[in-house]
Length: 84
Image (cartoon, rainbow, N blue to C red; front, top):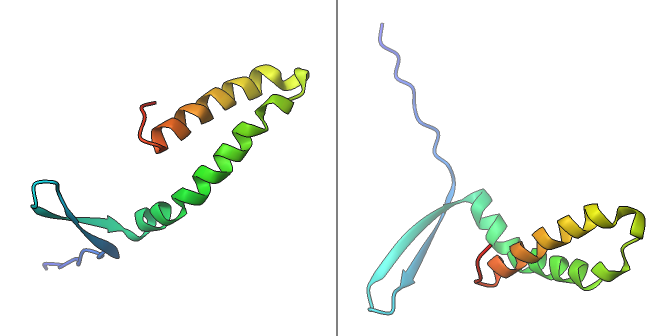
């Protein structure tokens, strides 16, 4: 007996981008990726706000928060087009 299993289709968002050369390229993103892209500006804003208040950390938790803050700085830089 042969069983045919159907692949589940993942909802996607199709985006067309025109390169500097004039060539059009299409990209397909999953629904979850599209939600992340939509949330990215707000996530970046919150990260920047946390970093701006970073100097108010209690001395007791300094090492933990310092490491977290440094990582957050790397992520924000990457989001702005830098490298991590």
